[in-house]
Length: 228
Image (cartoon, rainbow, N blue to C red; front, top):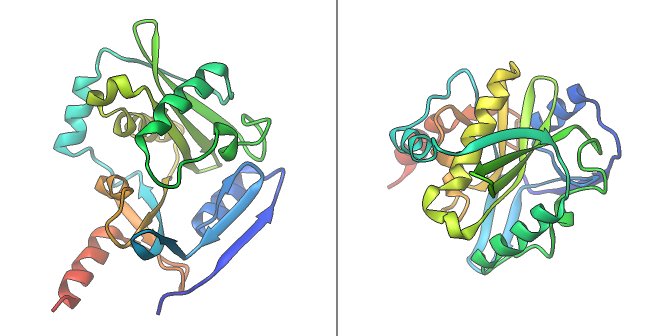
């Protein structure tokens, strides 16, 4: 049976090992507000929220993901301490016009005034085409896990699939750190705009009721078996 809850708390400092534990229990955070919830209501009705995590040992890029990497082989990528720069704010404003629903007001919605250290260490992936910044994504760092916070890209470069590209670079960065898991955030069991997060091999979903993680492939097989 689906657990129903909506929980939150404030925390200004969380050590890396504690962040690992929070992510494993389905918690996320925007700034110093940590939250987890099992249901969401939008214009399409009630949706069941499920946290996702990627088992980095089991991940291999799909054919389409390898194509994204090849298409963007000319780009330069660097990871630096997170900063809410004017470049980031400007790109966020251009990026958010792509959305019709649940449009955030500003980048500060997702971060504390000290994004690189509060409530945990956070880096940003900066992607350059020549001298032009074309994408940014933000990644929290734990002891043995990382967690995606938010990503933006210049709509003028949409053909590059930069949202997928920055996720792939975050996965690569996480592996280089020796991490076990990468958390891409929440999705829904029902079809939604977040389904792109489900296209990565090695994904697991959290069962709210038991607190156990299960392979997404196994879940899909079970759902298909239960379908009439």
